[in-house]
Every structure is written in C-alpha cells, then in structure tokens.
Image 1 (cartoon, rainbow, N blue to C red):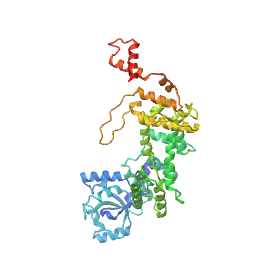
Image 2 (cartoon, rainbow, N blue to C red):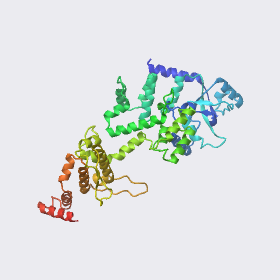
Image 3 (cartoon, rainbow, N blue to C red):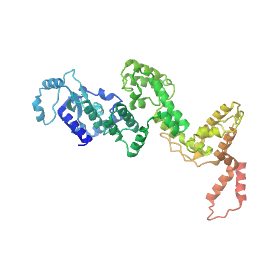
Length: 475
C-alpha cells in the first residue's frame, strides 16, 4: 500500500472515530479564532464574505446541505450537557430526519475548523430567532494533523494567489512538513511548480532583494526596497516574535495607498481598523499593536505594496518606452544607467525646461552631479507631459469623461524633445539622427505619401516637398 493511500485510510478512520453528530447550533456559539491567524491557510477575506452574501441572498443558504456543514470540536462533557438542556436522547440522534437544534450552556463556545466566511455572510441575512447553522461535531481529541487537514481540505475550494502559496510553502519547509509542502506545490501550474522547485533547490538562497537586483532594472529594485523598508519600519522590533509572517492580505489592502500622517481621514480609518483588530489580526499583544499603530501614523507618504508597484510600473511604461527608444536601452541595462552613460554636458549646461512653451528656457549653473540628476528628471517630465504626441499611446479615460482621442506621433514634439536633451547635455545615436532631420520635411513626405500614393501619382520632384516645408516654416 502506498504512503498516500495509508494516510488517506488513517485520516478517514480518525475522522470516523471522533465524529459525534450533526446538529443545528446558534451562530453566536461558533468561534473561529483559530482561523484568524494569517500563518494558517484560513485567514479572513472580506471579498469572499461579500461574494457569499450575494449568493446566499439570491439562492438561499441551504444550511442542511452536507457540503455546507461547518466542522467543530466539542468535549464529551459539553455534548452531554447540551443534550440534557435540549431534551435530546443521545441514542435518538441517529433517527432524526433533520439535525436537531442543540442548546449549548451559556459558557460553551465551539471551536470551528472551517466556515468563518459563510457564517459571517449569513449573520446579516438570517432573521432574528433563526440564526443557526448545521455543525458536524467532532471530539476535541481529534489529532491536530487531522484538524489541519480538515481546514485545508475545505480551503481547497478557494483560489490562492501565488504569494500566499509561496508563504505557506515556506512555512511547511521551515517546519519540515513534507506532506504540506506537496499539497501547496500541487496548487501551482506545472510551469510555476518547476520554476519554484528550481529556486528552492539552491543550497544557499540569496535574499529576494538580491535576486531581484539581478533580474530587474535599478529603478524597480529601489521601489521593491522601498516597500520592504516601509513595512519593516512599520512593524519595528516585535520582541522575540518575528511579526513579518503575520502581515496578511487584508492588512495590506487596508493600508496600501494611505498617507496617515498627512491625511486625517486615513489616520481615523487606520486607528479604527487597529482598534477593531481588523488589521494585523495575528498580533494579539496590546502593547505591540499600539507601537505598530504609532509607527504607521507617522508615515508621511503613500504606503507602498506590490499592488502599487505593478500599478505604478504600468503607469510609467509609456514614458519609459520613449526614453528606452531614445537612449537605446537593451537587456537588463536600466534607463538611468543609459542616460548617465550618454551625458556629455559640462557643469554649466543645466537648463530649466519651462511648462509654458512661449517662455524662454532658463539656465542655471550647478555641479556635474546636479546637472545629470536634474537633466534626467527634466527628460522624464517632458515624456510625462507629451507622451501621447511622442508615442501615440492613448491616455486612460477618466471616470465619467469621454474617451480621449488618440493622437498620431508628432515629429515636432520629437524635434523639441531632442533639442531639450541636447540643451541638457545628453546625446545618443537616436538623438543625433533626429537633430539632423527636418521634422517639417518628414511630415510633408508622409502627408504627400498618404494623399498622393505612388501607385497613382508620380511625385519625384523634391522641389514640391521643399516648397511645402518652407511654407510650414513661415507659419
């Protein structure tokens, strides 16, 4: 018999041996504290609650359905007391066509192994006096490994993001839990599983930041380091406990993109979430929570996360594409490295680029380091302001606004960009080529080619192009 089948058999026998009865229990008697630990696979997900609330409102709760039962642990003494209070004979339980309502003593709370999302969803749906759920009772002597299996088996119906899987897999590796490791690896696609195993099989794993430094451009690595520094500074020293594994998805979603020191609304919201233990639910010590809150409220910038990392990366892509094209960025070389390598100005070539094209450019002297850094920022700003004309990329539509009109790439903007780069002391093969070309002549040739196609017209006389270009210069 294989190990898998042996384990399946032993688990089945253990559940069968410890199973007591299926009964109806009041919702207020169900406790899910054990499932609030983000180091487990059962953290609380408000989005899942909203999803179930909608389903139950439309389809009904189906509380007696076997697939909807909630497993819970009970001691023999607690069960016996409840049977007496409910006037239910233990021997008669098996003959009930429907699970009987079991009235628990006031001090008795059942520790549930699964179901916190559906119970949270039905609390606002069920009528007063009808707030119960069907519970499968197991002896509190049920082996811890089997309890864990029950929690994770039910969790199989939920989709986990790759980050969750990696976190739980790391916990299994740290505990030497080979079976748990196989279970979480099975959730990944074959390609992802292969890549992750290759990554984990290295004898000496480097820190993730060092790994990203080899794979990502410098600017993106600095952003990831900014995320790490922010969250580590937020947690601070937590005494003998490492608080980093206790940062759950719900906490990140509540805190990301908030600037509590600068926004009263954000301060009030975060304080409320901390007081209600909605965030950092795995940290129970009141002093530690107070210290973490104090550090959070002192953050005077938008709290970053991997979500903001990817969103900001998407936002920067059109501008980065312009600069990559201009400075010939290839491979893993960053835009910043390419721009610095193509700087040929002096200490006196720094130029302020005015937002108003009708005003003259204002020059300012500075050190060579200042000139380079200032010039890089100015070219990024130029790309930000004029990316529709430089790239033809359509800006995102604002809410309740008309869809913006897609603009064609404008050669005049490229001429001005190349001239600004030259004024700031930058050069490249692409910039030199643009500076040698007359944008008016290029636009005229493009216009004539579209208005008078070569298939139908013979326009070989260059004077026509030159005359039209001269007219444009006069305008």
